[in-house]
Image (cartoon, rainbow, N blue to C red; front, side):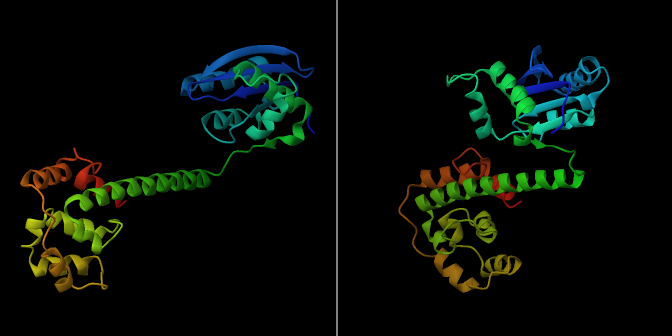
Length: 260
């Protein structure tokens, strides 16, 4: 276990972080708030390494609950030693100070700093991550966001189709395949679908490599009698998809975005 001259606890927040600095005897030296902004974080890291530690950044140990992010990267770049603690473990250390359940940013920051001084093995020492790992993590997070957005859009599309054009759901029950979206762009209403040329349907199927149904089967389905609906409903559904103002969450543009 490494001994440090200063122990810093950071209670992480979205807009501003509460910071408490203790000396080696766990006496409070500083208590401040740091905005979650580029300049503010750089200023804080400089102050901690140069003013508090007099240039000996490795004499400073920082404890926080988040193992990555701008504040971690900024401190590591300054040579400060950074440690992460699981939030559930922080709850146990918090009981040493109080049994009250109310949130107290200053107390949590002090608990982090004090726990790091007394129970360093419970923390995980952080190190700068490879830029490729960071990029991969961000791409994975973006992929998850897109998958969720695609799921929301297709669910709303399915709900809308069920209201006035349910025969399309016999082709793709979940309304989540790009070839169906392409078909719907060419035949947005039952009346238009009934006039759709066979060549257009065949082109869509070929382009999307769909072999489980052929153009004739799709055309037969499109020509099936539609649900009885007022012309106003059909116009409103078509306008909602085209303008992005309806329940489809962006109409055609939304579907294209959901394709990635």
